[in-house]
Length: 211
Image (spheres, helix red, strand yellow):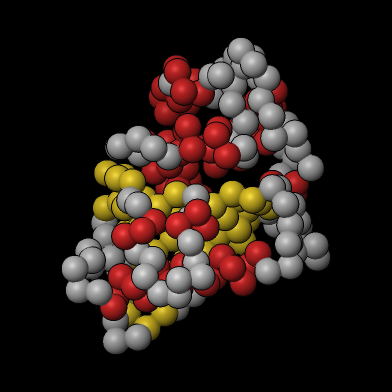
């Protein structure tokens, strides 16, 4: 388990509630969330024009699913809704709850005519614990085909951070670098030289990245 607190005068911890929302939530447009999502979903379709959405917009039934169950909801083009969650503590019903969240959103988008016509739904779950102990993979993809009068493409992604153990010198892809930051950003005091793309240069210049 990782310390959820960030050093004062250092960088935020992306797995803490405040750090997660400072970087991936609260602002429009949503550049960091969209860049991270594009690196994770492994798709030929490039997401763009991210805009945040209130959870209340999509949650009508069942009432037992509260707005706080949704860390971040983000609209993106083309016709995509992203749900992004983080969890530091394991419980037995985590995967069931994650599936229920996305299913509720998909169902309500189809049920109420005033909602935008989304055709793609992506649920990204970043967890600080291990769910699939027998698999060495740290990213798991689940296609949750959902059809109830309307066909939707639904993708659930679970990222198990404890299994990602690459050091700075081993980082090869932009995806590697994002996952490294989720685990280690709060222990850094400057931008590592490996993070030299325009995206990461701009990220490290973002004042919200620092406490």
